[in-house]
Length: 232
Image (cartoon, rainbow, N blue to C red; front, side):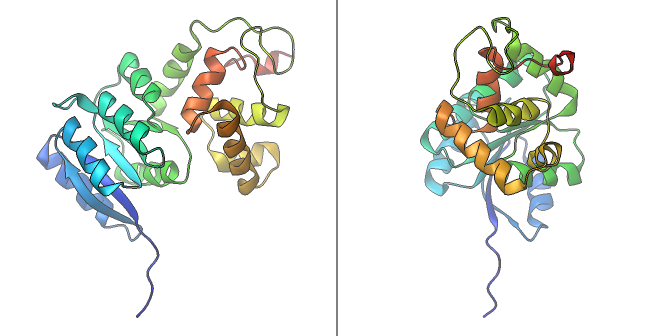
């Protein structure tokens, strides 16, 4: 018998049946994806994640039963190896920040094209983070609010000290600019594998489990600052 490549196991959490069916059909046309369950509300999503332990949950936010933010938090706490990618009609900054703080690895709006959704599902599954371009800059700027001002030092701000190397801070800064691993590798003249290793080391040092959490920590602690790197 011919061995087939392992398919990504995906749980859909979406309360509108017709939308859920359309997304499922799109995903299951791909040879590397398999929808293993469908949830119609937040509580059901948490229960099914516990039962199925999928590789990725494609999560709506505005659902009954606790909604997507709380469901994301509970799933990520119970299953840190399960990625959550939010797909929603809402571009409210507070919601975006809340679900990223809950542990989501990405946030897309429902007007995204099918091919872009598939690309982002694969990106999140391999450890990248994705933000819809229409909300990315606003959200990253919001995450900076309350961060202490930076000093003139190359990597340390005047706030909480960090344990990262100069190279690791470069990786975090480029991640905050929205670059995926391949783009970070090209910018720093590194291999993709080396960038992945840097992210793993960053996660361990900061006690986080995703790129988004690492970037949020860096922004809020004043270790990096958007839009200022070229001034020096």
